[in-house]
Each structure stands twice: as structure tokens, then as C-alpha cells.
Image 1 (cartoon, rainbow, N blue to C red):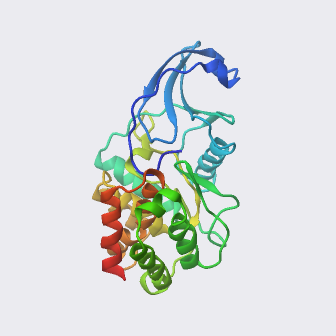
Image 2 (image 1 turned 90 degrees about the vertical axis):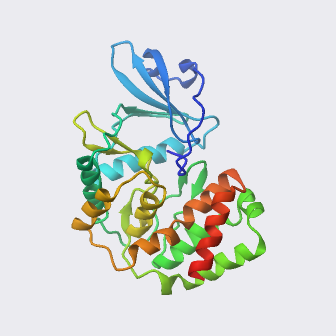
Length: 295
């Protein structure tokens, strides 16, 4: 899965594929690194039969890291109707996927992606959360079930980061008090909405394409939660233009004030960055601006 931040890292060095004890990887002839998030190393690999696949690996990954990603891709495809890469093989230290194309970034592409996400968000669930914890970057995504969307977002998407050591050092007592106060006010600030199936890590780098140019969604962090929580990352991280959101609203209308709420809901992403990297001034300042506006 991606880092959830849109961060690009230096290209990884070549690996010895024999380390992975995979018959498919034993057929690798050559590789080239692909850019992506910091959480994993990603290669395009050419096999002996001439076919090409995408291989994701990580140094000392959590035992379920790639199994969770594979399950998320399958869920988006089978329950949500999205195109995702086919999972060819999953192991404790690697994931092999079908190769996809760079996204064409045309208005038609963005409109199709927006409609696809709207259809995903039309799939509702019985409660907020997921049957297991997942991963956002290299940190757990807490998904314990809840019947209260406001409590779920407060506890699992905002307050859960305050105990992470790097976030704890980046925020002062006033910041933490402001976040706790804001969480208590969420029922006043966020209109009630049902739990829907979400991608969970939707920045523009997690949109690729088929050879025909149809959108393909990668690197999910799935759960059942508010649709606007999914949209907030697409809206606030940049790179996704207005035709995406216009097409989305044709299928899945949004309530008044949704644009203003995007930055409030994007708190999760700012806190995730701090928890991964420490005191990034841009993200600390963004958190403080949000607290000034919404508290």
C-alpha cells in the first residue's frame, strides 16, 4: 500500500528475488524501479516468458501487510465495482500484481474515475470500521467496529495518532487540547452520513489506467466510513481536477458545505504524516489553521 502522503522516495536498489521463495519471482529476468510511497519498494519485472508484472516488497514488513492490501483490492473490485490490479501472488514479504499504465490525466479519465468512486460510495455497510485493522503507510489503521460515525472518526482517525511518538513530539499541549475539543464537537460540524465502502488512501498517485485508458485504483486502505472522508484526501492533496468531483456528484450528491468540510476531514492525513515523519512544519501549521477555523 502507499504511504498515504503522496511522498516520493529515491529509487530502490536491485533485489535478489531468490530471497522471496516464489516460483514466479524465480522467473524474473530484469527489473526497473517504479516511484511510489515510502512504505514499499515497487518494481516493474519482466519474466522469462516476456510478460511483465509489478512487484511490491518491503523491508521487515508486518506479517499481514500485503495480505491486507490484496484483500482490499479484491473488495474494491468485487463489492465496489472498481477496476483494480489483479493479485497474482501474495506472500509475507511481497505482492505481485498485473501491470497497469500511467493515468492519461484527460477530462474523460477524471470523469470516469469520479463516477467510479461515486458508485463505490453507494455501497453501504451496517456499521463503521472493518473486520480487521489495516495499514496506512507503515502504521496501523485502527478499524474497530462502531455504530457511531462521529465517534469512529474521532477515536480511530484523529485521536489514535496522538499517542504515536513522532506526532506526540510534533504537537504541543494546546494542539492536543484543540484536537480533543474538536472531536467532541464533530456531531455539530459533520452531518450524519451512513457508513459506505471507501478506498481510504485516495491521492492522485493511486489512480492508474488500463491500456484503453479506464481508471484503475491501487493501494487501498479500505473500511466502512463516511464518503466525505474518502473525498477529503482526493480534494486536499491536489492533482485531481474539478471534472472528477463534478462527475462524482452526478451519481452521489453531496450535502451543502462539503467543500469546507474537506479540510476538516483531512486532519487524519496531516496527523498521519506527523506520526510517520515527525514535526513537518507545513502539516503542523495546517492542523493549527483547521483548529482555529473549526474550534
